[in-house]
Image (cartoon, rainbow, N blue to C red; front, side, top):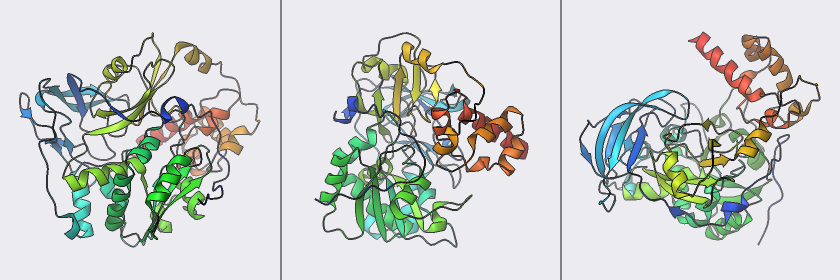
Length: 443
């Protein structure tokens, strides 16, 4: 079988992968918890509007909340049960947000009892985009951007290529890897639907070359298909970033301040398109997802199919966690937020639950020193920025200058600069804070 040459981008880092503990374990379904916590804002854009009231009985798959505008998606019941309450809960973003609390019926078979049938073969692109919004689909790679908006090409733009992100460059995470191995037919079906919705004529799946089993499997599945191909790219962080992956696969560069559609490309994650290919033909909404549960504090590491709204404390019980006040990260260690509450729920954008034990946390909490002007952050930054200069401006409170003169807004917060900094300066945290301050001032 033909193997492709290494495709990549300049700069980036090579953190230890830590994927061996879960990459070869098949996806397992997690039991349903007694209670689900369902924030209404599980996506970028306007939060969904609740359709249910306290005490109401709902069935699995039933819409619980409706999209509130164009950049919004509905929320469906991950389980059959009764609405306990509508209240504010603490989310992984650190803010209190409205949520539906659902008591799960333990005696229920938890079949999906609500579906919306559609004649997919005869849907035009606009109707297909509406169907994608109605199923509540968002990007499952972490950003949780509504998929119907991602696939809707802006007026005046022309796209020809759908790029499917199968890199999974974050350490520890392997859920996308398992999805490619276990649900390849769903993925390919989802790619065809996404191509119809976006009007693209060809597609390419980019997969890091530490997952050659997935590359080979998809090449076999796509044999005889001229307009869709699977291609290996170099294993390097952040290879899975949109701009980096487009550069690696197609040699095209997204202009500063631009979007992929500016150069004829639209990008989606493999988990997103596998969900599209599996759920839309069945008329079902997004009610569960695969996450990686791993780390030194976990006895039964692996990839689990979990209902949305499952509290991380329940997952830790099922996965055999034992330990003290460790650090819990939702997603990967490079970009995932750390959370402290065991009631924090799994949402549509949660790709993993990583536990770091006490010795690791202490090791990561090294003293912070002054910048020694070594330049490591400059050679690591995939956007070719100067993180050291940005850090100095942040320390001086020059947030406006960071945006105007130092191109702060080109930073997508990958964390490469913080990872390589020998002085342990939390550069990416400074940049997030500066962006937030600038947004508040602009508002």
